[in-house]
Length: 384
Image 1 (tube, rainbow, N blue to C red):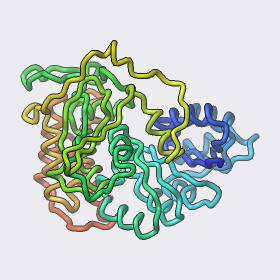
Image 2 (image 1 turned 30 degrees about the vertical axis):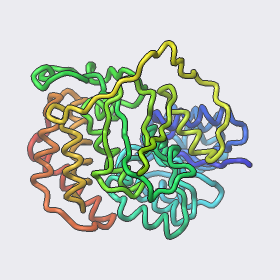
Image 3 (image 1 turned 60 degrees about the vertical axis):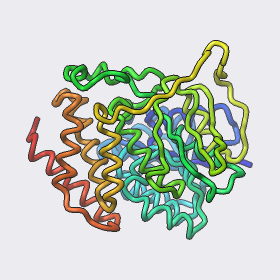
Image 4 (image 1 turned 90 degrees about the vertical axis):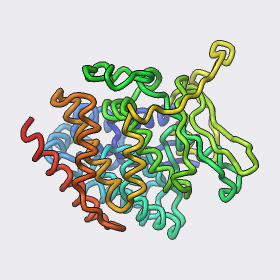
């Protein structure tokens, strides 16, 4: 059966890999594409995949795209209204939400209300609004299929197993480019150093998040909502080879895990065609060449992203929003060479200490907490 997709974030890492999967599977139709500001790549995608709809988040980019695609039968929309309108159309089956940031929340909610399957690669949606998203998806019987490699691995490990028999989720992390270093060794690390991920090819922000272990902290919060477990049931393991993508330990002591080469196309394709497992022309694990797999405890004194995330999850309410927003702003400052690597932790910590928690926040309150966090960081750093 043909799969009709709308992709939010089509010009990013997950979006472009999703389109590569469409290239290899002729029964995928691309109905809509959305991106931020990359007009040249979006124009290429429209000409190749011929979607009916395209959205550019920046209005000026949308106007430029309209002019460049005037010869094509595509409707070009802009901004949040455009994203929501795209999520609300009828002629698609799966929303691949790979857009970066909390702008993914409202279109995801719109798609759930539209009874569309969600292939979720936008961490912020569940980190900040899991208390709203998961009950809504359950009430409307809308599947949320994880695209993150770790959450996909957990999801795959749960197939055919009773969820009330989970003892522990084993969430793996590569450790990033600075694994094994102590705090004093990271005082002078550069942006270029942080972007040298040992195993995965990802966007700049998520690569820095991997280096700080903030990414793993976000995944802990996300796992709590996706799989309905408590925080103390989620154990993080540093696994430098990135072959075991995560696992589930059951109450009888048995462990089910998913392994494979580090390649995001596998979890993307699994979400699109679930529960089918289609052929993929990707490298296979060579266990004889690999020889061994190793596991370590995360160094939470040095890599404070993980304990700060756990603290945000324990406090709950709007605190995970502030954790996420402060990190987003801090990483942007770091990538622009405005702050040092270790300053990322200080900014997150200061923002969390400054925040007055809102219990059970609405979407408007979530976005308000994000804006307040940005204003607080702006007050600290000015125009730096």
